[in-house]
Image 1 (cartoon, protein in one colour):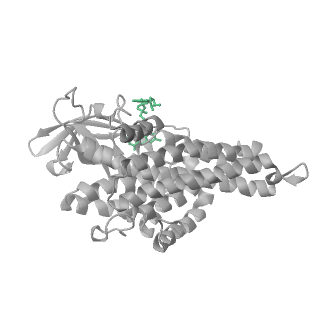
Image 2 (spheres, rainbow, N blue to C red):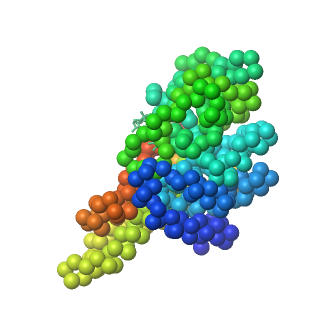
Image 3 (cartoon, rainbow, N blue to C red):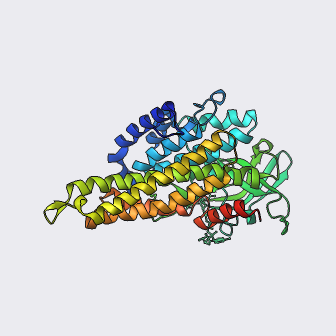
Length: 383
Ligand SMILES: Cc1cc2nc3c(=O)[nH]c(=O)nc-3n(C[C@H](O)[C@H](O)[C@H](O)COP(=O)(O)OP(=O)(O)OC[C@H]3O[C@@H](n4cnc5c(N)ncnc54)[C@H](O)[C@@H]3O)c2cc1C
């Protein structure tokens, strides 16, 4: 038993692990088709996974962030594309609505994000602003009882499945000295007039996860679409949402690495060369042992950040450390897994090939490794 995880949390993760294992035969076709089957999203709704961190009075299970990290690890160990969709829906989007939403906003959107009818999106990145998110150019202006949004968002996860996207836009002119000022979050229904979902990106990995551009062409939403206090969304929504989201991506990276290394260890037991299982060779053992130790360290960092979040303690730096270490560890671990399977590891039919491609995104989204280092150093230096 992990020190920060109670038996209820482990039980929930075990139930999800059993479900995820049964999904395995369906994954190659879904990755080929570039879509998560709707019924899988519906199943996650029925299992309670999509609302697990939402408080019980708001219709969820009220589970901890630790439990959520364990569940994401289990999903990612089998299907990383599904894990990132769940992480964005339940970690960033629902988490922000629970934290900042009005009772009406919660009543309108949370049931649709819990029940498995869709997965929510979080639209921050733009063609000209990624790491420098405060430089975003999407605008929002008030027009009588409505808000009118214009701009272009890039790389939006889940957009095709989303009933709603949290969109970050600027109200008023940009102040070069305070670029984050005026940034406001909107709950934008994806069927609102002026909302255009572009062609899904063709990616290196995470092929079943939807990543699409969102164009807002005089998109109109009601006055009640503003999420949280106007003008404060850079800190209150973007940065705070990403703090929590980074724990989810760290858990995803731990799951990918574990899934790949478990397969490599199984192969090393069976595959024989020079008359012995390759797992008998010290070079193979060394690589597997290092990867396994790395995975345990990354899991502990991840669960520690989740544990701090559950206790209402500051966790920004710890989430960045977990995300940085786990995502870079997943590169090394998936490399070892492909190497251990030799030529078979390079072939499409080997799950480790897919996992190596999927792992690559984890050092990029929700803040690159470079940005995590900046966050960690800022915490150390207070500069
Ligand atoms: C699969 C996928 C899904 C995504 N999903 C979403 C989503 O749902 N919503 C969303 O809003 N975004 C999403 N993104 C976008 C993602 O968050 C950005 O790609 C990421 O933040 C990096 O931004 P960028 O791509 O513009 O790179 P840039 O910011 O242009 O960075 C390019 C390089 O420069 C480095 N760099 C930049 N600034 C600094 C600095 N100050 N110091 C040192 N190095 C620096 C970066 O680390 C990187 O190596 C997704 C991306 C991917 C790949």
